[in-house]
Every structure is written in C-alpha cells, then in structure tokens.
Image 1: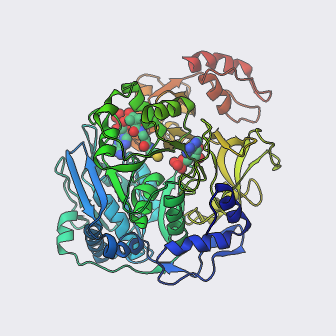
Image 2: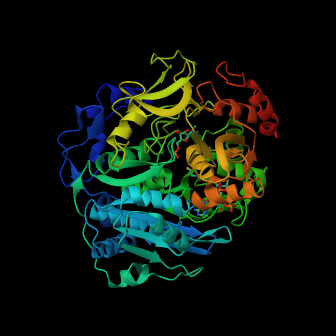
Image 3: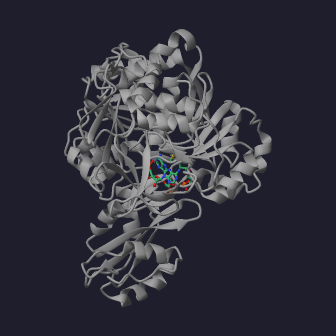
Length: 624
Ligand code: COA
Ligand code: AMP
C-alpha cells in the first residue's frame, strides 16, 4: 500500500476494510490463503478470514528459522533469581515443539483447553506457544490471582491440563503457587485430569501422584511435534477479564485476525523492524503480555524480553533502565504506574546516568490513563517520544495511539491520540446520538471491529451481545467514557461501569463485593475505586453489619478474605464499617456519588436519593 500519512491509512481502513486487511494479511504465512476477508453474513457476529488456515506457532517460530535461527527470540531477565538466559529462535522452537509433545502425550489435541498459571518464566511462553502449535486453546491466569479466582476460570474453560510452577518470587517474597493450584482444583467442579509443574529451586513443591508431572522429566521424554493447521477463526486463547459482575468474561481470540493485526501494529504503531528488541514490562497473565511479550514480537521476527522483576526494589529504581540498556531495547512498553513508582523513588531520574540508553527510541504507555504529570516527567527525563495508547483485553491491540511507524502526530498530554485503522470510534450520548467535539459521552466503536478483536465470549454468545452490543445498535460499547476534541484526538476519562484499574490491573468491584458479602457478619456492602497517587485507583470497601453481629476483628478478616479468594493483586487494604449505605429510592447503591466524595470532589446529592442523612453521615468516613 502506497499511502503514507495516518489520515489516508485510517480512511482506507474504514472505506474498504476488506481491501485494507487483505493487504495486511500478506505478512502472515497461511497454510491456506484466505479467499474471503470479512464474513459479515451474521451480524452482530463478524469473522475475519473465514476460509483461511494457518498455525500461529509456526508463524511465530518455524518460519523464522531459515533467516533468524540463531537470532535471539526471547531474553529472560530475572533479577529476583539472578538469572539471565537467551533463547534463539531455534532453541525456542525446539523447546516449544517438545513441550507440545508433552501436552500431546497428556492427551491434548486441537480445540482442548490448557490453563497456564505461572510466574514470569520462559516456560510460560513456551507453554503458550506449544498450545498454539497443537491448535489447543490456552487460558493464562495471572499469578497474582488466588485459588478461588483460578477455580472460576478452570470451571469455565474446562481444561485437560493445567501448567503451573512451584512458586513465583515477588521481589524477595516466595509466592507458593502449588497450594493455590491445589485449592483451585479442589474448589473447581471441573476435574482437571493432569498438571505439569515446573519445579523452581527457590521453592520446590510436592507433586500429586497420578495427577502431576514434572516439567523437566516430561520434556526429557518428549518427542517434538509439528504445527497443526487451524482455521483462522478457531480460538487461539481465552483470557479472562473483569466484568461488572463477579463472573469474569472469557475473551476469545482467534488465530488469523490476531496474527494479521499484531503484525500490522509492530510496524505501524511501534515502528519496529524484525531483529530489533521489544520489551513489554507487563505480565504474561494480562493481555499486554499475550500480545506484546509473546505473540507480536515473535510473529514479527523481533526479540522479546520476559522480565521477572519490578520497576523498583529489584534492586532499585534503575531496574528498567538497566534492562533496556543491557538488551538494547528499542521500544519499552509499561503501565504509567510503573513510571510513577520509579519517579517516586528517583524523582530526578539520577539512576538514568548509569546506563547507555542510546538504543531506546520509544516509551509506550497503556493499561490506564497516562496522566499529564507522569507524561511530562518521562518525556523530560528520557528525551524520547512517550506514547499513550488505549486498548482493552477485548481488543487485543490499540484502539487509539500515535502511530510511530506511520507518522508521529503532535502529542496532547492526556490524550491517547487518534483511532487506529479499523476502529471507527464514536462518542455517543445516552440516547445514542453522536456527541459534539469536546462533549463527553460513551466511547463506542462502530461494527465491525477490526481483525484481532474479540469475536465473542467463551461459550457465551448471548453475554457477548448483552455486555457489548446491546447498549447501542451497531456499536461495540467499550465501557470507557471520554471525548474527541476538534482535532480528532481521543481523551479517555475513565470507566463508566464498576470496573476499576489498580496499578494497571483491571479489577471488578463486583467480585470484591461478592467476597465481602460472603462474610456471615455482613448485611450489605459496596466497593468503590478511589484515586491513589501511585496505583491510579485502589478499591475501598464499606460494609453494614447484620444486626447483633460483632465488629471485632472484622475489617482484618475481610481484608484477608479478599486476599485469599481474589489475590494480593486486588490491593484491598481499606474497609470501613458504616451504619447504612446511600441508596436511590429504588434501592440502587450510589457508588458514583461515594466515589466522588472519597476523591474530594464537590459531588452533587442526586435527587433520587432515599435518605440524604445517610450520605451526610458517610462523608466523614469517605473523606478520612
Ligand atoms: N504473583 C503473586 N503476587 C503478585 C503478583 C504475581 N504475579 N503480582 C503482584 N502480586 C502481589 C504483590 O506482591 C503485592 O503483594 P503485597 O500486597 O503483599 O505487597 C500485591 O500483589 C499488589 O501488587 P502490585 O499492585 O504490583 O503492587 P506492588 O506494591 O507490589 O508494586 C508497582 C507497585 C507500581 C511497582 C507495581 O504495581 C507495578 O509494577 N505496576 C505495573 C503494573 C503493570 O505492568 N501492569 C500491566 C498492565 S499493562
Ligand atoms: P485491560 O482490559 O486490563 O487492558 O483494561 C482495559 C481498561 O483499562 C480500559 O477499558 C481503560 O479503562 C483502561 N485503559 C487502558 N489503557 C488506557 C489508556 N491508555 N488510557 C486510559 N485508560 C486506559
């Protein structure tokens, strides 16, 4: 395609999506070339490349061997275990093909699910790619989730195998994975026949005979297997994300659209060339990790970094600069929280002086809004483009960004810049009409969504429609509020639902409420996300006791319950016992009003309130 500027590219993608994505699809190695690009015969369900066939793992590994067999594919850098290890494309392929053999030996075939519950170790990447090789569907569960959350996901995905590890390491604290896995398998109704466990020397665990196999032993006996071609529309993975209720949503990703879209982004958004080093300092348990630690860099023939450490404390606030310098990273991708953590510890960025960052050309930011203060700090200290881009687990890649490989548009701090090709972003009012420039509303995307985005929810077509497509006919509801200014720049203001964003991690207040409500002393409860300087938002609980129930030790019990059921990552540290919760006359809890008060805003008292005195009483607690 001979178009240069962003505007031409974007317009082409909206005017003739099939032509646009047919062109992009040439970067994929298909086992059967798609003849049809978009199947729009069954709206609101759309399918990309319906008659195409490919294998994602073969695209990520095998096809690079002739040209890049000895190039680094994956660099594992783990300050918490003092380990660094590089896998060439050839080595990563060898390990992956053999681990696919292990899974096949345990009965995994095309379409079967495999749950992966692992820390940030190369084996997590190998396990994901091995599933893709077999046409099996992986479902990675973030290591910071505890047994109950894992059980919910196991019950929904119904895996044949769970791949896990004996432990993770959080700075210097050992996190035992095995007891959480055992709890989850006990809680789950689904029986998982087999588990593969990576024993880590920092804390090995006992294996359950007949159920668990040791990773190393299994690999020693395994035979490599070849990639299995799958339909472009077959699922590559399911990734659970928080919805407004306690039940997570299983976001489905297909194979073909995913490969096409991610390859497009590497060049056009991230301005990468094959052979260069890309580092997404996220976790394989999140969508950023799926797309930009694992799939996109490898599909593209780049080098990716898997970092088992934190931005601070492993050992200091220079950790990111050390990794970027040492591995010659060209583009670094982090959540703004990580930059705020570095800024807090090293406000003058003095540690930058210790490293040669001449290879680092870009810092990409996502996962939460990049606040202007953090933007200014990073831009000044690093002296490179800092690019905020907005996306969701559902979309798998950026909805809005500043496309560095196309045209660097001027930055407006606080804005994620402009919609990416394929995303016809519209801001709608409650009655479905379009907002004026600058007017805040519900951020929606006109259907069809581009390749790589969710085709549905795992086993829940109806929920897919009711959650995302029912609010406005013909549009996908992002759940974010925001506006587009007169220059076409998109500003995301925040979620319009009960999803909160804690340190770049998406959490559901509904699932925390479900844990609190499960305590025998609790009559009613509400959880709201309140502003936090470091983590963006943190959850805060308010509970009303059952009559006669004792408040003794209750807050500690509730905090422990959330940590044990959902996980430490919820960062649930504050809960207050109150006399009553403010409600509308129809009984709806006024969460938004409470959130505003807790954030110090001059929040108007809604006219629908049942008893204004309840709110008055709460003000002191919320402001405390
Ligand atoms: N396994 C087990 N526990 C985990 C975990 C994991 N993979 N990830 C986090 N946790 C635990 C932490 O140890 C912490 O436990 P604690 O309450 O005992 O201290 C808790 O969950 C909260 O974790 P986190 O929110 O990461 O806070 P932190 O205080 O440990 O670190 C930051 C603060 C800012 C350094 C950290 O939040 C960070 O690096 N954020 C960037 C997030 C990111 O990259 N998100 C990806 C989205 S793109
Ligand atoms: P997740 O699905 O975990 O990636 O979370 C997606 C949500 O995080 C979005 O719906 C937004 O609310 C928020 N988010 C992600 N990136 C950004 C960004 N660049 N600006 C503002 N909000 C963001």
